[in-house]
Length: 505
Image (cartoon, rainbow, N blue to C red; front, side, top):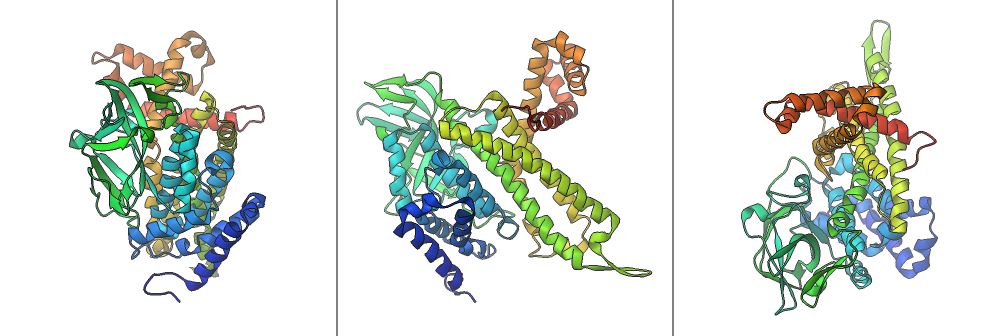
């Protein structure tokens, strides 16, 4: 039974309380947990999350449950740096609930831990990182203000929001000068207490590119003066998650809000602390962890949906002239389950290797190699697109079961969210193809001698751009089908090569 007032299962509350108590009373208990023990504790602490009715729960209640989860300290704010395997495991566990919950809570969780807190870990000083402990202690939630109405990740991390250095106040003034600069689709934006806001840093009118500011979004529960925000509106799924548009009107923030490990203002001048690590690149680091987490989430959603559907098809009897047989034994259904299992195993292995190599980089505070960066992009595209494909195939083989509420099929837009999160699939595939064609042009004679499908497609695209009277850009657009075919070949080649025993990321 459930309390009609809170929508919470009392037994779930008790289990969650025990999980919290073990960690808070015995701080060393957390560090001594093995993976199985930690998984059990995290599942116990998220029972009330898994039991949410997303059709009726408010985004405020969903946010409250994340605040409670934060306070358990099962996943510390510093685990992305110190124990990244737990960071990814937590995302995978929450993704197993997605066939019931949809994308809302999973996105809320990753926005807080990866985008907001993760950016502070990547760009902040030790003092700024230390403040994350107090943030977790009090269950304060964060959002990430990057994407804008007319700019954002798809535009190459171009932002139109500005942060002007103000010598008189020894701080910054943040503005969105027009509606095109408004932060758009900011998850958790209606309830967040803290925000990482990405804005163009200007000193005396000179731009120094996008920088991140870790600022108060609310004080004593009230939105900071000068911040205007509103709801993006009702969605097909995930309405337990608040998505906001946000604008800034002369919002004054202290100098300490600039995440300044790699760049700072000293004596009124902009100073880059480490020219080998531009702030632009370090902000983008969250895309790598995010892409791995999204790839794994898509795979977990698909795995869970196939498992529950297999249970149904094993029990569902179909008439035959000689008697009945289970739906799962029908040739096309059986073949689909077999094909899916092979593909799922391949994707699992590839994404797991990307995670392992990325965890090493996170622990050592080193940038991923170009090869690993490319592999992570491939992992995100392949895991998501293959999951969309196989879920669609399954939906069309199990009849009215796929139409019923509670089967998981009603939440398949979870995969749509995965498709455009942390770099839209089409944008990533365009980049793969462009980079490959550029490399082909530099070593054209040698590449032509290889005579592979990949080099043949590169050659055809180069020739089409050379012959076009409208210019190379127009030719590239006209050849878009060939561009995506090239990207597909690159994806297959990357998966095969990086899963070979000799490969090094």
